[in-house]
Image (tube, rainbow, N blue to C red; front, side, top):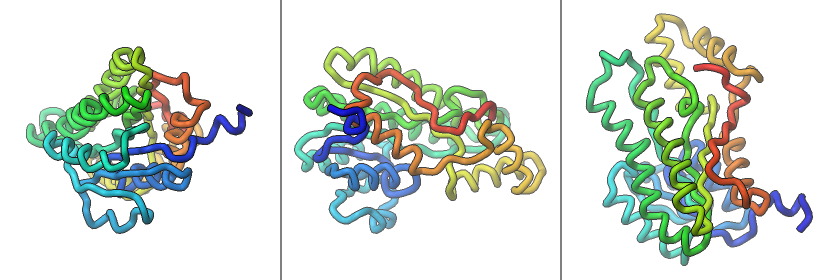
Length: 257
């Protein structure tokens, strides 16, 4: 196989993407679909499913609820197996000092961002062992850096990196690869809300908070959802066949948060 051919996933891959109807998840689901994969998406937002490409399957599911995750996998079984599972669902969580965070908001962040990834991995493992497939867990640069006033989010994302590395060791002998993608500041409505909340906490305006954020990035720019999708496609391509147990930052080099 020529090197250039190794950069493209083979056609016909069977792919499941959680939180795949919006943002990064939608970019990933669309990219795999355009690459010739059969794609099924789970998302809590049923209305957003109307924006999915024609032919992409959909299940409404809250990833923080294991029963709904089980139903998602039952419906995705219509693909006839799974080669790639993208464990993408997550929430931003609260922005507050540790002594001000509501305990229910803390639990919700952990339930979705970390427990939800466990539920998906648990139900994905049998199918991925069968296909010698790929599990991609979505973490964050907050999974390698401290993040003041965002401790529930950072704690959950550090947990995702630990989950990823442990599963890579556990499932590797069965031919399954497990990696985490760590997006940086990704352009879109979600980061705008985060900047807005941090600006309010700091008592500064949105523009100043955005400038501060960009100043912490070596390349002084946000990344796009399609940048994350491109990494997911590469990991699923022949060229990524020996990449496992890695926490791969796609962030323009975020230096600090």
